[in-house]
Length: 279
Image (cartoon, rainbow, N blue to C red; front, top):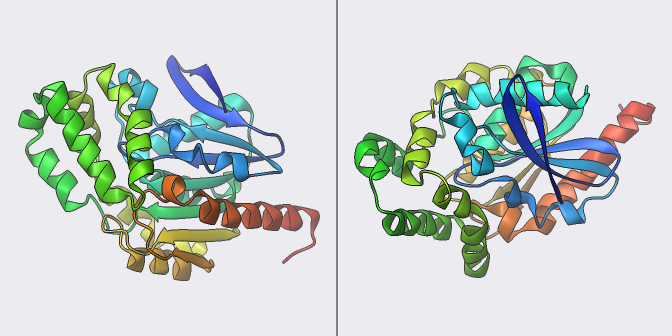
């Protein structure tokens, strides 16, 4: 994947890109960055894969210091970025917070969404999870944690969300450096303080009206975003549900193949619809 940047209204937007074809935009969550998709993207053919970085996350932490970085606001940033790249319509895929971002984008601007994949995504009233609520409540203390102590917090969070411990350690090496290179725990506190369940509740009733091909892929053993929510998404979106037995939260890292497979199916269905070969 190539790292790329562009300026959008004075804001530096970052993403990683690979391949050619139908635009496929992949959005990460917390405490991750576009590297979340590093094992999925090489398994995708026939698409221009763009792993977008949310404002205030990853290498874009500094861009979020003086800007709103709620999930709902990220949907605005995403649309502005698509405009800057001249992408009128894309398949949208999201994990965790990124799932909330793409839901909101699809509801607000359905003409921009060609297809939708959610994997272990926030939605409805499923979030923030208790541990994140606790860190938000203790934000002042968390923000002052020494780097070593904050590193342990992030490492434990990743370990709890992975069923593959080797991938959890690898994930830490990809996702922690942007915190370490900026203001560390204070950046994380900004992120958790921006979370507001009203962002997804505001679009929940509109999900059944999203008329695009969709897929749901979910780690069945996820303790952060329970599989019952994945089943609810599948009902509301009229989408097949791919339950990953034993999978926990960070499915794109632990189980890239079961994430790539429905994405490839989704790309094929979108192309068939565009050619008029499918209903």
